Length: 133
Length: 329
Image (cartoon, chains in turn brown, red):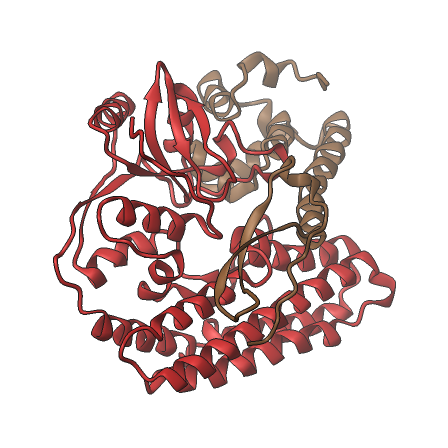
């Protein structure tokens, strides 16, 4: 049986945990081994960073009256449009519109409350949005 | 609470939960067996379905495949329930753990309180076991964690009732009856053949053909000028393989382990042995492929996407050979 290299690298995304994988042991029988992979670490970190970058870009767009706070909270909660649409229960085209500042300003409280529930915030967080970091 | 419960860590959540559940209810079965018997190995590449603007790529069958198929294959009876009402869901769970029953739950990774911050994404089909309750906290055995964990009832409820794709709706399950006799030879034969058939399907987006389709698409990104997209695209492939998957082409190793274990039954040992080795080789090739993807994302200036795609094509060739053998088992 071909020998499989079991990586023992640091993976900070797991908060000190280690995952297991199957590999053949010295006598060729498969068993689980703890491993740590910096390939996984890199891929995970990049995905997390992408959401952070999208948030930053969105803040800029909110300032310029292009994007709505809903878009900011969408990225903050690591969602994309299909995910948000299915959670909030609207069609995607509608959600897409709500991400734009000019449509956002016309939304009533009922719709806003639905988004606020999804993001676990209040309507005021959406209405009087200031980057509360 | 079950005092005699022993937590075990697994490579994959669903096969791990099913293995522990059945073993605890009197039918000892390993994780690779649970995975293999439910013919869970696959490859999917559907560019039309997007996740965060990235194509859907999967290295194993759709979530819940193992839970759905294990009873059919083995003849065990599994109690399965989804709920509309959260209180009802919690009452039943509390009652079951008080009866010392071990139960499986479907949850969203994003809302599990013990999940590391960087690992929180909206994936609704994470499986875990509840083995007890203390005050308002459930005692949890999460198969991909090293040790047992806990979650407050209100937090776990949010994770059990997350909305969106694969919404769990409080899904709860545990085995009710275990058959006295299981005809493993026949079952294994059928399962292996079924998996071989799905891997060699003529449908261009699945199995070996799907791998080649993705490889072609990777070759094309050489002409893409959007660096940010390329970076996210390459690491997305890795994440679907390594992390949503089980580490280092892990599903391939899991399946090889299954084929190795199948040798204990009256099947063609030589065929199992050869194909197990081949699929191990493919798993290793996929890890190499993941490494190349990450290297490509790190050094876009010297990106050679044809070179990266070669590893995936190579893996598809190895798997084609393996599953051609397995078709005749």
